[in-house]
Image (cartoon, rainbow over all chains, first blue to last red; front, side):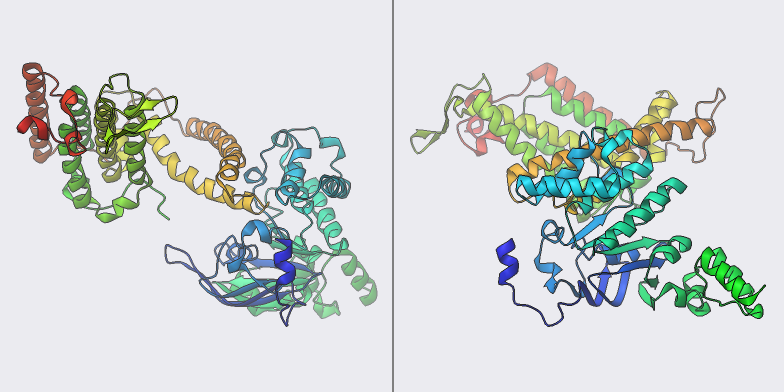
Length: 286
Length: 284
C-alpha cells in the first residue's frame, strides 16, 4: 500500500487534504442527499459542518473516507480519488468517529481497542506501542486501560472511540455529532480532545447541531441545507448572517444573541463567548 | 436497500386472512414431511413460487433468504451424498467414484436423501415467506392470537419480525464503523475474523434494545389485566373459507395416500441425475 502511494503522480492541488468537486450523492431509494457540493479542506483546520437533520452533513463526511461513493463528481484525499481506494486504506489518512461509540467498540478492554486499528494497518509492534502510548497520554485513559469498554459511561466510551481513531494517526479526524448525549463533563473532555488533536497539527471536522460548541471550537463553519452548502466561513461571520440562519433554521449561541440585542449600546454583534462579552461591556461602559 | 420483509401490495394473497396463509403454510409443511419423495416438494415449490411471483413480482428474488436457497440445496445434498449411512451405490463419473478422503465415496442413496431433504426445507422456507411477505406484522400478530395462542406470545413473534430490518440497518452502520478503523477484508480468513467486530456490537446493541423495549412496553400498560380491543379487526372472508377447505382437502388426500401407499420413496433405484427428481427408472 505504501509503495502504491509513492508511485502515484503528485496532483497539482495537493495542498488540500480533502478536495470535493461537484459532488452529487443519490441513495439507492432515490433520495438526493447532495447536490453539486464543492469544498476544500486544508491540512490544519477546525471545521464544523452544521445543518438540520437530513441536510446531507453525514452523507458528505462519509465520502471523505470512501464509506460512500459519489454518484457524480469527485472526492480527492491528498489528491487520491476515493473511488479507487478502499476505506481501510483511506483510514490511514481519514479517521471517522461514529456518533454512537457502541457501533465501534467490541474488544475485551480499552488497550485492545486502541491497538485494533493499528494492527489492521500492519504496523511494527514498536510503532503500535508508541502510538497507543501517545493516545493514552492525550486522552488521559491510563486509569481505564484494563476496563471493558462497555463498562465505561457514555462520555468515557466516546473518548475511547475517539482515541482509538486518533491512535491510527490520521491527518483528518471526523467527529459525527460528538456532543449528542454528552453531559457537561463529557463536553469538557471532548473540548480538550479537539484542542489536543488540533494542537497535534491535525485537521478536525465535526458535524454538530450545538452552536455553543461550534462557536467555541470551530475556525470555520460550513452550513448545509437541502443537500447544498449555503455558507462557508468563520462562525463569527455566520452568526450575523440572518438569511443563512433563517434558511438553515439555526440560532446563534445565547451570548451572541445577547450581544446582538445590545448593538444599540455599541456592543459588537459578533461576540462568540463570555469573555469577549465581558470585554465588550467594559469597552462600551455599560 | 429493502429494510422490511413485508412487500406492500393489494393482491388476493395480501387480502387473505393471515390464518388462511398459516393453514397453507402448515399444510405444506406436513405434506412435504410425510413423504420421502422429492416430487411432492417440487410440486409444492412450483405452486409457492407462482404465488409469490403473482403477489410480489420478481422483486422477491432479491430477498436474501431466497438467494440462500441454492446454497442450502447444494450443501445439504452434497453432505448427505457423502456421509448419509443409507448410501450403498457409489456415483460413477465415467468409471471413477467421486471420492473424498475420510468421507469416502458419494452415494446415490445419500444424494437422494439430501436432495429430498433440501427440497422439503425449500418448500417450508417459501411457505413461510408467503406468509411474511404478504401479511402486515400487526395482522399477523392478531392472526396468531386469534388461533388461540396467548397475545403475549403472538406479539413476541411480531416484535422479532420487526427486529430483523432494524438489525440489518444496524449491521450496515457497524460494518462502516469498523472499516473506518481499517478493518481488513482482503481474503476469506480476514472476512471470517471481521465477523467478531461486527457481531459483538450487534449482539450487545440488540440486548440493550430488548431491555429498553420491555420497559417501554410496560410503561404503555402492555399486559394490563383487561380484555384487549383491536385497532384492525381481521375477519375470514368467503374466499378464506374456500381456500382453507381446499388446503385441508389436499392435505387429507395426501395423508390417505401416505397410509395406503407408503412414503413413495424410490431411493433404492436412483442411478442418474434426473432420477433424483423424477422416478424415470420406475416408469420404464
